Length: 122
Length: 183
Length: 156
Image 1: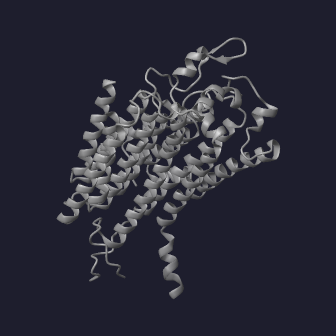
Image 2 (image 1 turned 120 degrees about the horizontal axis):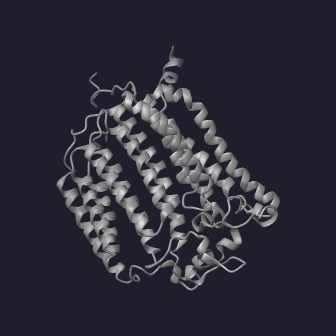
């Protein structure tokens, strides 16, 4: 059920990116889709009753510093978190690029409406 | 588990408001609410690294968006595209949503890690041998900087290229250079 | 872009150093506590953005100008590639954690551990912070005297 709600968020973003006329609304739709995908990936790696994948002092026992079995069996998955960390920073870079294109189009045509900039003039 | 449902409903309501409102500044603020709720979700899903990164990236993204929209007219465009296009896209999105629901019934329940259940999962190696092979206590940092450092190199390249592209698009000197050779 | 009132200027001149220090802490301890190079770099950039919003764009440009920010960006990216190539020279393969495996193992859960990971974190933090400040500075330079081109039909 939680996965279905996350997918609903992705569909809301897709609707906004496809149907709206205002360019900034399209950028907002793409951002909502990115948030939904990141949330879905982290939810896939969640282990209920689990601990964050950071080793503290009480996760090591013995003189050699071995990990306790409790930590190994109940830690959440660190792999999707590594992938999502990269994706969040890349989404900021692509947001900067999209907004700079929108600003230049506004400077040339005077509007954010995409149905009026369809004809290449000048 | 109830906290996950509450946060997801809050995020979905904020997203619906962001999509449907006619005021651009209100839409940008609602996107900020979506990002903030998503950062709280990451905290409850036991991912503190991601929560820190999401909230600071959210703040800078809001500053970029507001910078682009606040000095222009905000409420002058309303409405969607032609009616036929809207109906066709809504029908297609609904069909995809129904197909997705059918797929999610075949996934394991929420609460069991999906990637780590596979027999040859890499996550088991990262958790049990991460400290011994890379020496870092933060397992996520050991994955992105030691086991999978190529992905970090690719991400640094993509960020570099995107920022260079955005800086070149926003330059002011290009106009003067275009006018100068004609004189 | 103009600055803000005097209350905002006074408070932000104290707070920006705390934010910068917090960003350095998140970068340096990235291999022990949550954080790392990306989050710390974004926090460093946001301390300079606070300076720009509170005092105006000209003041922030005197502190860290546009060519200086792009030079820091390139230095950070170059440092990261240099650490990878040193792994190839000393370790035998690209990106090998050569400091941990051969020269300086350190003890786990201390600051000096995990080999080249703190160095990689510093390089990435510098790069990401300089990049994001560069883009926000470019956005505010570009749009300060803004007039649009007129209607699409080109009657003017």
